[in-house]
Length: 247
Ligand code: SF4
Ligand code: SF4
Ligand code: FES
Image (cartoon, rainbow, N blue to C red; front, side):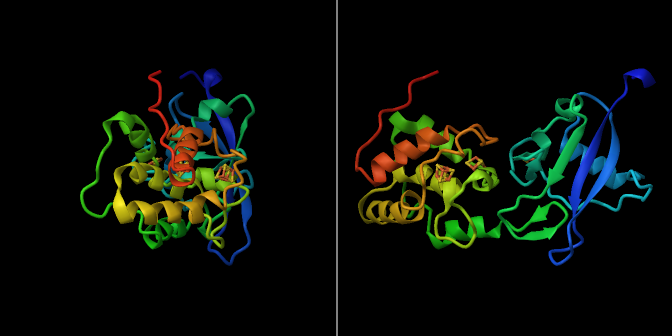
């Protein structure tokens, strides 16, 4: 790449040494190495290189989580220019025009440090609510596409970040709980079905304001509205939705 073609963005990273420390913004003028580079790979590069910030301080390693770098694990969820999304899915080329990339931790969860938050409450909720199959599941082939869609939930928390009704202090589990339930509701029967329907009503239906603020945020591309309608129909109205039409 010729020097004249080199692009750069200013990264504004919200940092904190630990949960008790005050958060502060660190500004880094970052040269974008290629069009495929994303926020996660930029943070990795910063942590392995010798970067200085705009005040001339050397940049200490930024705390953040990532694993697959392929939009498969959900670990790298953070708030990027005000929108919760996966850092490995946020290409820096998107931001070259505006020139600034503000990177913040998710705010609905307790801060650990820098961009790391404790999302343990999401997984504890699934365990408390016993959202798993007991015995053999009865798979209905007519709705396998819907079940598969729900199973793609990464438990990343992006939908919880935009949800006005979710916090770790309330019993409402938000869409991450709803997706786990949507996946197994069609497969259970008998007593477990009754229990699961009742749990769904309390942990999802009664707390959800149906605002659908979460509708378009899912980085896995799950059709959240359809899943919500489908599970409400089964668990609340005791009706079964028709299979989704093939696109
Ligand atoms: S529909 Fe509204 S209240 Fe319900 S989970 Fe989505 S954002 Fe939250
Ligand atoms: S529904 Fe989508 S946004 Fe919400 S936790 Fe699952 S993958 Fe993340
Ligand atoms: S690192 Fe796994 S989803 Fe981004």
